[in-house]
Length: 87
Image (cartoon, rainbow, N blue to C red; front, side):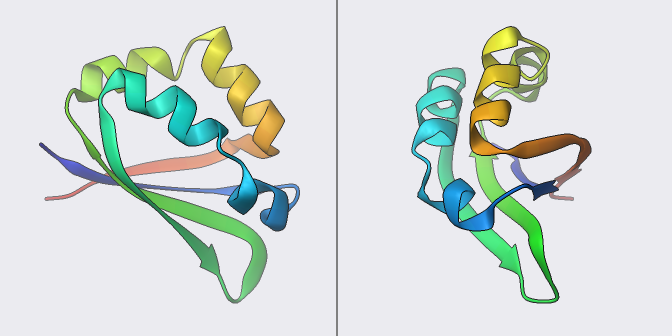
């Protein structure tokens, strides 16, 4: 099971950290062990590290309206999103 890191910018870091939505939408597509991070040098830059059972399933989900709605609710700026896979 690969571990991935995603980082991106958000509109409001406190709101993003408090939101239960990412867990609610990611766990059903096989994502576990979700950990959140913040950038001490850039208060609106955040990240996640998580274990992913099926990368193709996750990437397909990221193209759905449900993913877009979840990101919008959490204040994620999707154009800033970068995925890194553990090597």
